[in-house]
Image (cartoon, rainbow, N blue to C red; front, top):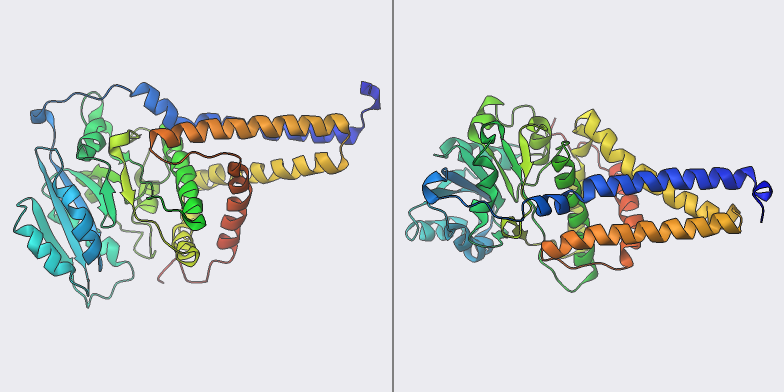
Length: 386
């Protein structure tokens, strides 16, 4: 085939294919690979004497978490850290949460309990619970997790507080951590874990590249003074959720936000066990995304848009293109897939998570479609309380 035999359609398809491919590679290299770059530059742990470590208040909101507190609370109370307290807020529990917490207070002097009354009539009781805990905290640094979470090791607090020590620590206000889900041998669990891994690599990578936009309350640290200066969750009380991602989206900047992605900084969490439960959870998380800052929404929307156009262009090359256009599509498709697998699996191994093979392509195609479906079918009044 000679160049003069190539049609304008082939040139158009090839041009679109290359442009979309380059953006996708750029996105993965700059953002999704951010955690891997952080790990390379922070391979040597920071050595700090105990007397240099600031006080930390670990905060947990618990609603009907009797079993999880029995299982996981000892890991929080047994951290290798010289100056910390654990504050658990009993958020209107109707099970034996109060009795479990009372029992632990007799064993651990650094455990403190407060509560949200059962009769409290607020839409987002968790925001109220966290606010009560923040006001009760004795320390400047607040480290948040959930009752169904357990830290990777007894070094968790040390790892999460490390960026707040040393040079330029004064300007740092927020530390974003990662919280993977426990594994289970079922299809729903595999989907949840891949989705969580990709979202984690995305928000951590964007923050590392200077564009922080969210965090997860299962593993998040920030300064009490910042929370009080920003009037806490004021302006977010109309939302049913958003105590973590919307709050971070509002206060995080390139200058005041850092990430921690070491193995010992992880906070593992129990995943939903059924597809229906995960859909409810996913809807709740997505419900606040339309209220992110405009720049965040544009940046987050461009990647799935170009991804969808990429796959559409690949299909058009196979259907309408000539032999050389089809060959180019196959070549770039394979290169992109191996770039994806290389970046994602490198991070997964460092996090102690499962690695992925060719199924990455199916997740890559189906999850954005599923997310778009959930966003487009979000029930009315599901986000704001008024």
